[in-house]
Length: 397
Picture 1: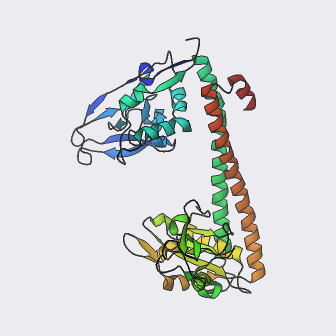
Picture 2: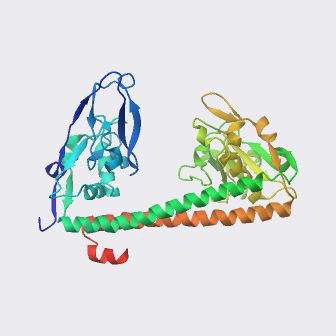
Picture 3: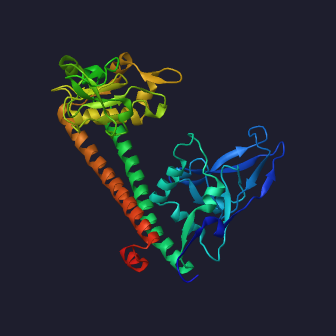
């Protein structure tokens, strides 16, 4: 090949089925492929007693693999050496790429393009929730195939960006660990007097039931537990509800308030906090699965309240006071009785300023990684549709 060609994937990649019959009393290591480009992973050990299949398929290093259920979520990868010899079910088809024409890593780049994933998702539209993108769909998919040297240069360019993103992610992870340790040290300092939570903060539970959707004169944005993340708010699906003025006074928010997820089917979300910073025009109201923590004038400051709630979530302290079996809930009675190490206001401001500075560094590092991911997406798309020349792209990296 001297020029770029566009051919069906099935012409340059052939499905490989190395069948392994499962024997009683034998343990078998298995492999899967995760969503969002997180790649192939070890799914653990199975036996004939823990898996229904009578046979599985042997995985080899360099195989191109995907998840038939979650292909539209980017579940593709090239099998690494550490998974060589593992087994996979037929939900993870394995393909051997013709190395004289195509590098499997280049094929993977094609299926990391957002426009390709959107097209795959559109093919599945209208199907039942767990519809498969099957082998025939993959084999019919048209992929660009430039000369091997060009493939290699594109792999190197994108790989250089990936290395930068990986380094930033690792740096952000390390900084986050340091921040959390420092936050724990400062928030639990035994030199500060211990008080009950309701002596340190004003704690209010959300409205006991959701009011009707807004159709009258009292249309008010309404936050739910689904909107609250770990320090972030999802405002993409905020509802509008009818809160009369009296209700809005009780269940409203002002900048500096901290919302805490009171209950969730996922234990990891119990106690998840976020500070309200006035992202939408006031008044804002909130549902019963949220608790509002507000600073008390002369007693506490909003930034300290925020870091205390973050510590209570990170340390599992909120989860420790949650009741329930399948769905955990923090009760108001338990919340107000939580012990708080409360320094004076000046020390709270000093503690919050230090932690805010550290948090800003983490946020800046994550923002740079996010920016590079956007750069990578545009670069990859441009390289594969040839709107970006490979030589000029190499100069940018």
